[in-house]
Image (cartoon, rainbow, N blue to C red; front, top):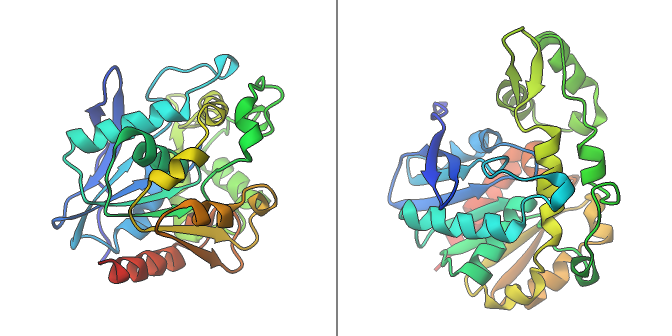
Length: 286
């Protein structure tokens, strides 16, 4: 039976309100953190497999704090500290943390730097850049991802045109159909004139990308003492410059996993496989 998608709520994390989805369930708890520029609603097809046995939270990490992509954006260590505060305020503890891309990275920083103590972690394609990158302070124009995201198309005349655009782009061609529909439903908003715009604007997405250079996660990995499964997409373009096997070697209780035929966006491409991986991981926890 399909679960209903909950209404977005907000939690004060100190100077800002962090939006989140909450799925009420059992005593076991899971926190899901999404990738840069994406949405908590995209976790829904995965979350519904864990409720009501678990209670689940999915924060919306986009423009909840004011940030300027031309002035360094929103630093990921700030997001990580906000996640730690969020968990304390929501009384989330001894939980499983599942993060994808940015969400995986800020989850690791929240544990290694801000004292969050989860039961275990599943880090899907975390962005652990080569360490020399964290010594740089690139401009928006020089940032390889932010410079592209700020130019992203952000206007469609109607819902049909928006959906046609999504289906025409190779970027979305490998996505699960349900998740693509959720992206159209929640990732685009209808304006009063009837046209469609992105919920997380290109400026906000660029600001999030810019903030990723502010905190080197590598020295923090040895401080993550819980079981941690690091998952890589076999066909991810990040394989060329993100050394996840090295990251696993630094984690005291790290484990490596690979998803065949998947790129960087594994939860969007293969939600069924991610669900099975999380289930198997939970089953092996002490």
